[in-house]
Amino acid sequence: MASESTQVEIDGHQLKLTNLNKVLYPATGTTKGDVIGYLHAVAGVMLPHILGRAVTRKRWPNGIESEPFFTKNLERGAPSWIDRVEIDHSSGGVIYPVIESTAGLIWLGQIAALEIHVPQWRFENWVPGGHAGKSGKVTRGGTERYPDRVVFDLDPGPGTGLAECVQVAVLVRERLGALGERMVPVTSGSKGLHLYVPMDQQITSEQASAWALQVAGQMRKALPDLVVSEMTKAMRTDCVFFDWSQN
Image 1 (cartoon, rainbow, N blue to C red):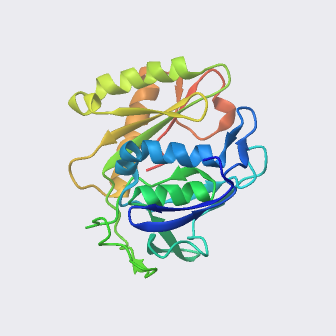
Image 2: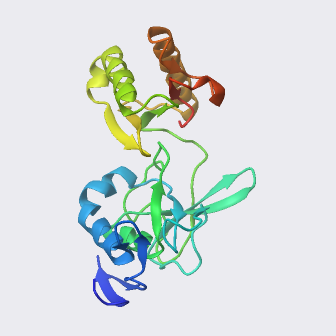
């Protein structure tokens, strides 16, 4: 994308892309256009992981050397074809985008959303273009949350790194048996791991958290000199923090 701005049609949607030559990663010279091109290239493997899930964004409109900001509510001026669902929180209703197409990913690149976060659950009975609103219409998400996966976050403390996380991950896989064989490791940050375990049976978020805490306790017992499961940062030196709380 050599031009500074352009109008494109993706998935039948019109989208204006601007500031394409802006450098977002100074160390490599990676531009906003490069990021958008990357999102277009990986859409086929990325979309299955975020379909039907509320998307929060961490944005760096002025590049990664500037201060980012985190956003939940759908941005003003978002294209009308972006699906959106409102969820009630203790602080009030939040309207989340639901990204279901390559065009939606390209829009995330356009707003410099370099981190895209989704929960462990999908909207109940969600189907592409069906559950969420069309043409800017907002639908409401139900209060029940049924995760289709459980996640363990392995966060290395000072004195440990990816190798120690892998050691813990291998033990988790072994202890979970057949379920562990389906577990998917995903790199996290610069040296951590997320372990995603698919759930075939319907469980609640509370049940997912309870099970994750149980597994964390088992890992702490099996590797007492390496694993901690408490939030206290002072305990993490030379240890891997087994974070079960992200469910």
